[in-house]
Length: 309
Image: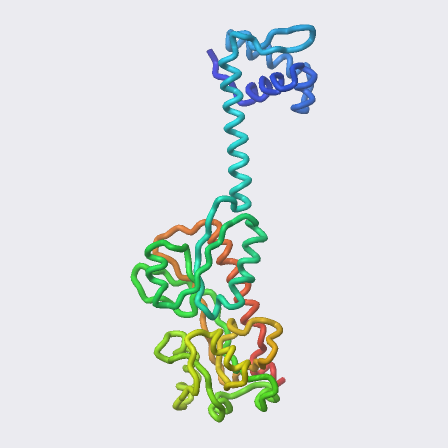
């Protein structure tokens, strides 16, 4: 006995659903004679009667009830598969966990997540904010798939993928005398109350680098642990600071003025993940959205040479 084909199953099911050859033909969009011939051929090949003919209608034969039960089960499975695929395309019942450094989480993360939501509207997202010393456990214990950091992580079990560089910029309170300049030098900032992050912190070390490269003895009047704290302190008129462009990436920031630094300095962004871990399609898409938003933020504030021109 020959095996039944998927095409034969499709035709048998159409006749089951519609009860007539004409109805099955309409359902499948093919000719009625073709349906009739295929049913006869299938019955002859299988050696069983599938339908009883009653006044133009096709009624499933009693002796073939087990066959029709299996056909129904097959199509229920197909329908469930289609529902599962549709849910997966939208991100239903799926979780994406990742984390960001505080400086990147402030503005960039929300924009990247907006892009992820546009592609996967029902995806559950678990966003964490981590310092660099918290990143290793987060990744090695697989609490999330990746972390967007402003420094590479030095660990043999971790992969660091370079994303983009953004300039360090000067920030001063609105109305400050330095805001009249198209670009601000770190020498200008040294004459003010400087706010920053402890240089012993990897992020703080990057913010302090332009001063050290110029041979200046940097002394902070106020220190905060996170970029958001530094920005808030400057907005409230408590001093000036050097900060990365990601941390001041909003188009409108009332109470704050941003200017390019005369001295060229950058902060680099990395995507960090557990070595050997294969990322989900959701994670890969999210990383692409971060790359896009980081690039836009890096270009928000013009370079010093451009601002002077």
